[in-house]
Length: 281
Ligand SMILES: [Zn+2]
Ligand SMILES: [Zn+2]
Image (cartoon, rainbow, N blue to C red):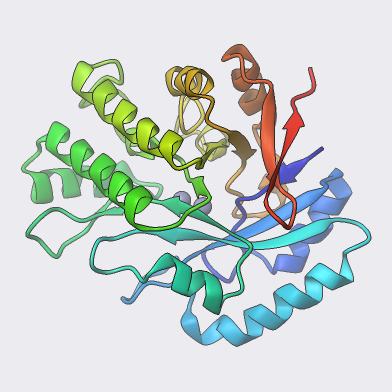
């Protein structure tokens, strides 16, 4: 079974119409394609869903689900940005947008007692470095701790199905400021994984860093995959596609890493909850 639950069209920061991704997915033999636009945010930005397109989008999703029902299962999810005191309640958005599932991700970290946001994602490490210096005084431990604590707060206060690119905070680090085997860092990761395990949340294995050449491995990386196995936390492989041809990029490496970590099954959305599918050799 071939699935991708993390896809951005031009309704957020992707390149193309949703239907272009569906046609590509059918051509590639996908069984399930889930869209996950960036959730709307209450300030000007270039990547999130614009509220004024909501009605049009709802009709489009319904139409596409029906039009291609005999060839592929289409689902409407959303990649929810959690920013304390700024982002909307997730369930409210889920209801308003008639969403099938929610992926929860942190892209913008809010320091305590400060209204500025640290943009940790995007193509440039300069923005990451600038925020690290200006908002956290260059203290990487403080900055990374703020990222994981915000992730924990999302897991505890919102209802998500999937954690998106769990350790993406490492992307622009590239071993410049900290090493992922430092004790303080592994403690943070373990604390987050315990919350995920308690709440039966899925962790995605996101391959985008590999094919965009921004990371040598998946988000999360191999050491965390082994912990997911030990904790029996369900996983799925997603490409985080922003263009139709990206739908299955670096899936080979993603599934290989899962097998090497001893994980033999992935989950998929089946319309009324989640199903398990063995990973074929
Ligand atoms: Zn994301
Ligand atoms: Zn995404």
